[in-house]
Image (cartoon, one colour):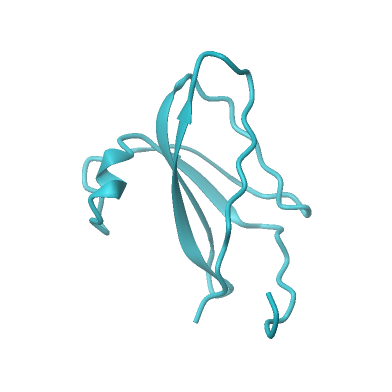
Length: 92
């Protein structure tokens, strides 16, 4: 991003939650949602999870440096892997 110092893609917290419909409602608390998996990214920003097909909320965050970003992901039976590109915004 122009005008911002380069920020490492390493050590971004990536979390996978069930009940993604709770995220779509705009509720910050998301009561009733359960974290299924979590990891931190590698130096190049890569991460991976083994998940059964279904619909999930994926949250990416890096306190202080980036705002939390949330995306809804649907995994189908057709493929064994899916590439996910997430745009992160510099924190204010």
